[in-house]
Length: 304
Image (cartoon, rainbow, N blue to C red; front, side, top):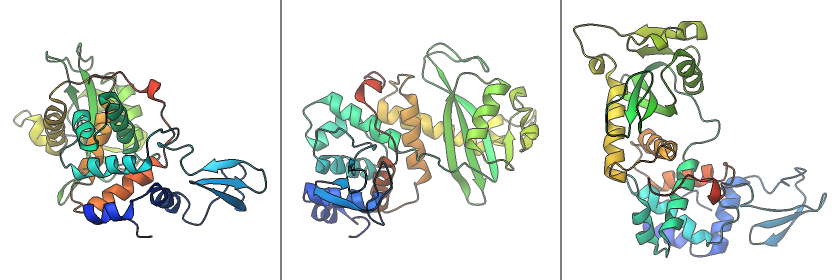
């Protein structure tokens, strides 16, 4: 089977049935054949509809168990159509747009699906950014300006790490943070940036301990130059993020849901040069098979 469809017509031909969707998931999840999810034995009987019975321990495992698709009551064809629609929209997707595109009867279903797919946009154990990296914080949400280090009511502080390359901005990583204290910044940066990288920041004192963590810290301080010109890549990413949030969500952001939106923006930004919807579709399917299932009740509240 081909790895991914090139266009919408090919997509419809490749996934014209539930069986075709199941076969595609099996190809991606088990490229070398089924292996028991409990005992890892390869000797299994295929029962149909992606279900196998291990001949050693008798465990019955499905291709969708322990994945984003687990316990779904909707056809996989509809899920595939949702994923194709999401990767086809360059500027993001709203729950209302997804509901209308798929003909879903419930806005809540569209909202849940989008948040699950956004969660899949971050690959478990994903690579950290590296090399020359610019880091800065930005405030998201709220109506009033915030105070650095402590945040502000209704606002969420987001840490941005952007690779600086000879061609411009490379990959990015983002994470909401509780404050801009040295401990919080250090812990978050270690999750996003490879040790040994060179990190450029402004003169905020919270970054002063980075050299002790194995980074080369270069504070960019010049009283005659604005911060956004000294660490321009991180500031540009922050501006693009805010513009994207405004265009996609019209400024209505529940802080509990912000991590999902950061994941989507990061996924789209890091693949902004890709001209193949099919490759993006394949990647998102692949990552949906790698994440644990998310019960709807654990998703943050609707609206925002």
